[in-house]
Image 1 (cartoon, rainbow, N blue to C red):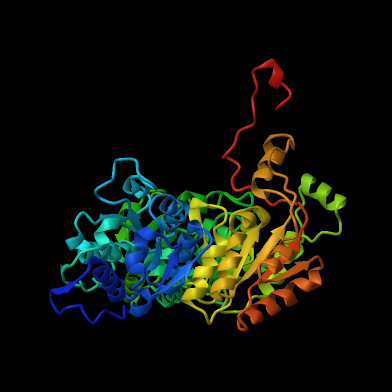
Image 2 (cartoon, helix red, strand yellow):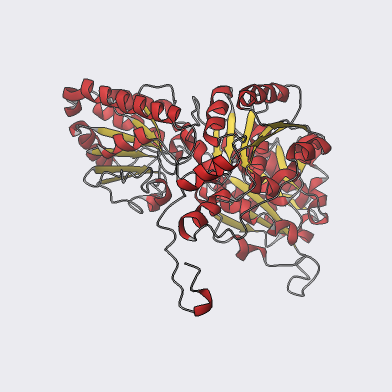
Length: 595
């Protein structure tokens, strides 16, 4: 992660300038290089200074896309992601993206110019109260209540976003960009995060030393703390298998012998079966969210009698979802290093069965890989029927396997919400952190494509690939224009199965295949992409999948955005969760057949 490059005005004392200048200089002090959004008159006086300050303003198609781009930028770079737009409707379009960033712990700063201070409350043009809208999806809100406080509150919003690891809102009445005052540009606050309390670390070390079958869950906190190497070292010392928390597949290198795959929806059976055997679980940098620990593949795998050690930077997460034996309020990397230091020289109970455990780990992983290799298509009755009806269409699982083989090792991959994108959880493996992007527990459609655009801006040297279903693609494909206009080359893989698959699966399982609102008739997405100035390729042969992805990733080096439209069958993987719905019951005569 890069340190802020700083402003020449930091630390020099009060300097006479306009609020717009103070605002921009504070952005510079925090190392802001790119801002995503749509231009508007409310922010124009500050925007006019961006080029001279070395800040690139990236205009997008829709403000939600700007918010997701800021999220992707932050998650890949480890720096602030910033978005800014016109007051009122421009700002309200940020809401979904900010909520997604909140659950991803992304340090996004959402800058929201507001109606003028002298007309607020009169019902003027593009007026709304903007602070209440974001109050539950931000870690901090700053409202500039006086133009003299512009630098102070701008700096505080940036500090809090990083200190609390989540979005911060900076709300500025549009007339407060004008005037002239004496400003001090504040230096960014940089803190060193600790490992946790001595007593809790000691108790955790004793539990790990006594464990016969320790298992580590590596979560998003490991990535945020730059703690993958520390996690690897601890796992190797314990000979403990490591599973990754839901949609954090990049929290541990997949080539490592102790890697056992992701938990959660469509995760690794190997990881789940190994976790089920644990007598001590170290949940490192994870809140153990409910969606990531629910039964999957018919396995209720959470080890109910195991001792659980949970490490999280936010103490409010400790013991919130799962009962714990020891809670450590600390940084995942620092905690892993501190635990390893305490374990050095200790007798490990697990040393006696080390070889047997390693053999078990290898056996479970091999069994899961063999099952995945043979799992060429879904086998439930509905899927079998639609496969027979359209035998020429590709099986999603086979496509995902080919994509996995063709992905460059340093690729960044974002996944959207939907049935096929969720099945991809079984196939996405990474060697380095800050490589996988997903909407996490907020689960909004239309996330993947704009997010990977932001990721590409943050790391232009890395291939950027989005997995998107056709429903979600229709929400976000307008951002192709952003890629073309701003020369941000990425690749989108669009799974065209002509349906809202995740919801259709519920209609199959609970509503006797009465499909309401889930069938889609689509145009050629590849043809649309070409019309918008990108490359567009339609794929209907399995042998074409890998070469097409390789070519698309290579084309990024030439500045080309490519949309790969893959024609897949309407077969459906398991639902998100089977406890979310109940079998329908009807009491009125006119609805008696709707069961």
